Image (cartoon, rainbow, N blue to C red; front, side, top):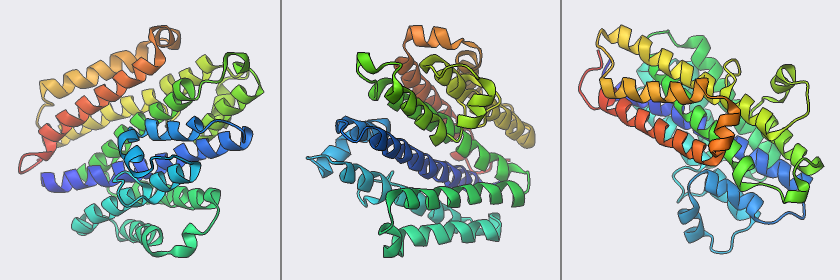
Length: 316
C-alpha cells in the first residue's frame, strides 16, 4: 500500500470520529444547560477549552454566547475543526482514494458532506435534531466500514485513526466535567452534580453499560474509572489503547517490518499508565494533569506513526 493511501485512510476516520465526538461535546453542553438554565456562560465556553481552540474562538467571538459556541463547533468556516469542516476534509481524502473505499461508504460520506454544506433546512432544525442526524450518519459510516471493508491494511489504518481520535476525545469529555465544569463545593454530590455525570455517560453512549458494571451510587471516581480504565467498554481510553497497540502489531505483521523502537516505546508508555494504574492513583496525582499527559502521549504516538508509515514511499 502507498503511504499516501494509508495516510488518507487514517485521516478519513480520524475526522469522522472527531466530528462525532464534537457532536457528543455539544450534547453534554446542551444537557447541562437544560438541567441548569441559569448556569454561567463557562458551561458553554468550557467546550471550547476542551477542543483546545480558545484563541481562535475569542478572535472570532469577543463576546461569547451559547449560540456563538454552537456555531463555532458546528459550522464556523474559519474553524478547521468545526464539524462541517471535519466532514469536508474526510470527504476530500476519500475522493482522492475513492477506488480504495467501498462505494456505499463513499456515497454515505458524500451525502453527509452535502447535507452540512448545502442544505439550509438542516441548519434551521433545533440543535438536538441536528446533532442526532450527524451522529447517526457517522455511526452509519462506522457500520459500513466494519461490514464492507476487507480486513487488510486499508481497514487497519482506518481503524487506527478512529481509535486514536476516540481515546483523545473521550478523555477530553471527562476533563470538561471533572475540571472545567466542577460545581460549587455545596453542589458536589448533589442532584445537579449527579445529572451532569449521567449526561457525560449518556454522551458516550455508556450510561447503561456503566449501570451494568456499577449498581452503586454514581461518584466521580467510579465514572472516571469506567470512562478511562474499563477494558470492555469500546469508548473507554483503556480499550482504545489496547486496540491501538493490537492494530499496530497487525500492521507490523502485514508489512513484515518491525515496529520502530521509538513507536514501540511510545505505545508501551501508554499501556503502562492507562491499562494498569488504579483510578484512585490517577485522581490523587491529578486527573486533569493526567489527561493532559495522555494527550501528549497520543500526540507522540501519532508523530511516530507519521514518521513510520506516512512519510516514505511504500508502506509494504
